[in-house]
Image 1 (tube, rainbow, N blue to C red):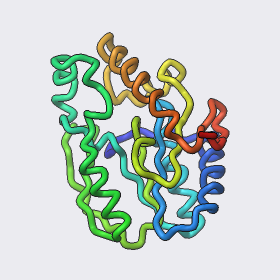
Image 2: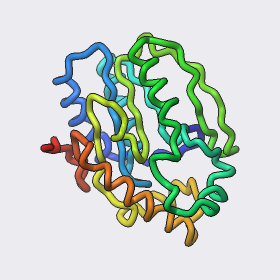
Image 3: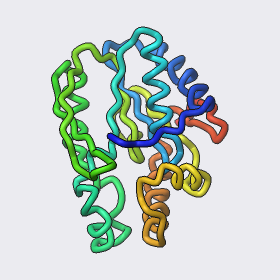
Image 4: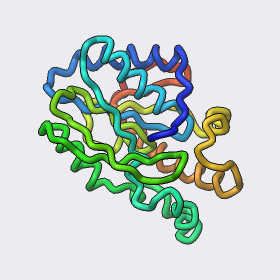
Length: 211
């Protein structure tokens, strides 16, 4: 997303290095990496760190942010949620058909037109891209471990533990309704944890999840 604030630290780089190590065990021409977790847990930072490390290794990666795939535009989302209740918040808010379309275009070396939210204007822009030379596609977002991916990474931090990061990044105002949204997202995100193949601990160590 345009205008997003990243707070990359050594812990993100440490976890990225471990994840890239796991990627070396996957022998495919095209590899999808999902990075999911709660608000402020470090998803964007980890995705960026993975992307940067792959680039240093001479491999092409691209990151798409699932927050760009909300059905309801940013300017209308809060009112829509208030009208429909916090129970409406969750997986159904995303355009999964479009996400899956772009995953398919990645596997088939297409030139997609990706949605891209500008956080400064709340406008939805269009990003013309090319998957032809891209080996790795990183899908980052709250519910990203729900996508069809070769490795699904879940950051095991709750929104209570990431309050400082949420305030610093300030993508949404902190008020009573926002707290209800975070609690609802917490419930939905935690329900997806069993779908992850790898868990990032609070210390940003990465372990394989036994299923």
